[in-house]
Length: 361
Image (cartoon, rainbow, N blue to C red; front, side, top):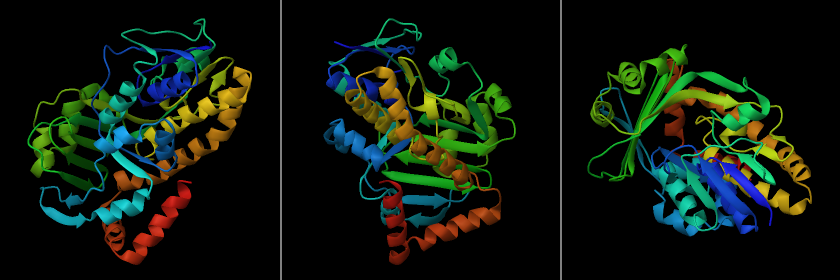
């Protein structure tokens, strides 16, 4: 039996472990964190990501956690109502093959599917010299595997930071979003352990923002917000995620029997909106390539040749989409409002939906 070592028990690592284990590999997953992470904001599985979830047998469990088509309320900085984006607009922007779930729910579903098929160890690390037939570095943006294989210098930091954290309180079933010059804030409220706040803003010095710490930096950037977004910032949340917005550009993803996958290889950033889906699709297609080729290096080369164009496209889309999350000026905010309002018209929605479905084939 072929052996695989997977570093990282996030979406990319667990999806890879599941696909390989079902293909007959003996899989060990090594995760540096002491336990499975359960936090995070929402992710969309659309197009190829949805198809990968289907091939991995995850759709029934994910549908139980699907948030469905969400009606979003756009608010002003003081928290007052601006306008409502109906769920039909969300349907047009994600297409017909789509699921919306909290990141923690997706990781839990993956973990429950693979925990009896693989040896999953928490609080441990490994390096690519491990004696194994396949070594997969799925250890995220700050990948130690990538550094061990190729050195440092492949992370491209963009002039933004992002924060997210769970919020407690009664369920309201609402999604609230504020979009202003250089920043966006949002809150998805679906009850205990299913409510999270999200913040991103432009800064010319991300390292300085990170050095200040999550809550001081976020409160400074969004301290004027009122309503539920302001209330969220005034709490003392646990498990705050706060990091620079970065992409990863590595000339190659594999070296012999070792390969990078997910954010460790091609981080597309939250601005692309396809990070989770691309990680799952990458894991699923890796399994296909390993079944189609006798040798691991040949399989890895074929897999990368087929997948890299998609990752490059999504990274380019993210760079173009930065203005949606951090509009440069009030004028750009106004243009975004006009575009969203136009999408409430059936004809415009149909055109957008067709374009999205073409892009996600």
